[in-house]
Length: 76
Image (tube, rainbow, N blue to C red; front, side, top):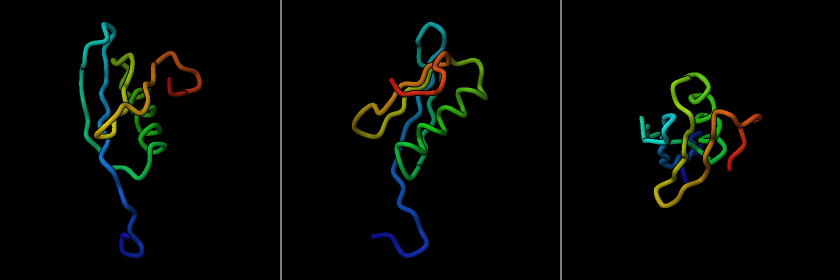
């Protein structure tokens, strides 16, 4: 159990895809939950307008794919 006042985090990889679905950029981040990873990925996808989608991975599996056209930003 983490010491009082600290939050446990887990590694995630955000893989951004371009219009041809090729891997364009990947970011490794440590976050507290799948929901935090989804929120960060959605924000980055919106702010970095050159990518068409982002895949959210934990070390063992894909968690979610967000596409620019999703309204609201739901996982598929």
